[in-house]
Amino acid sequence: MKRIALASLTLFNAACLPGPVGALAVFATPVFAQAAPSWNGQWAGGWKGGAGAQVIFAGEDVVGLYWRGDYIEDAHGAPASGGAVAINWSGGRAILTRDGPASARIVIREPGQPEIAFLLKKD
Picture (cartoon, rainbow, N blue to C red):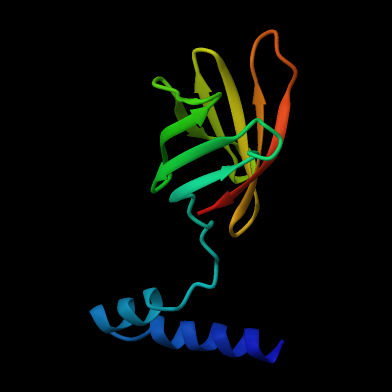
């Protein structure tokens, strides 16, 4: 409780400083929120089970999807709830959900095929 009161008093005192010095003191207060980990890089897995996939990100954008022995030309990704990524293409869709800093779970759905799920690791 003392720390909260002291921090509030510090912000109050900084806000009372004149002009740009006061604004800088208030807005330079550190923020401790963590940014979501980046998807940037190559994520691959499932090779042992015969259903291997590779998802390639440039920053947070899906730029490549390797599935069923070929690169999918029309694959595109979009953010989904909970930090997941939804990947869609003309023959199906996938949801990629982070399982840790360097691992993720992919669930692939294609018409007329059973759902396939496995782990991907960041290369």
